[in-house]
Image 1 (cartoon, rainbow, N blue to C red):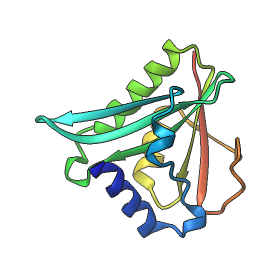
Image 2: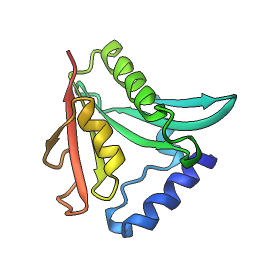
Image 3: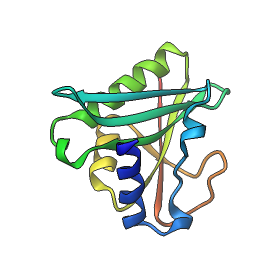
Amino acid sequence: MRLLEQSDAYAQSLYPAESNHLVDISALEKPSVAFFVARHEGEIVGCCALVDAGDGTAEIKRMFVDPEARGLKIGRRLLERIEAQGRDAGLSVIRLETGIYQPEAIGLYRTAGYADIGPFGTYQPDPLSLFMEKRMA
């Protein structure tokens, strides 16, 4: 909960409400969601969710690393775990939405092979959003 609250506050400090596409706890508790945490020295320092759309695709949601743990490659490890989950589930594509004011996140996704796409699902075009996807082998 602490990380999700930090994530909310961080997103709200960067973007107006209409550009924040956060999902609440109840959405993360559904059977179609795989939720992961990362620990460092016994403390939870990162989290992310993979939301299966039921059509061979899934979306990364709530990817966040505690600012105190940044630089430890926690985000990369979480992303690798999500991708492994996607491959194991037989997904063809993993997608995400992130904000343009998060260059570290954008860099992580691009380095991992995510490519820019247009809005997907229920998203509408937003100049503050960047949409990306990666095809699973």
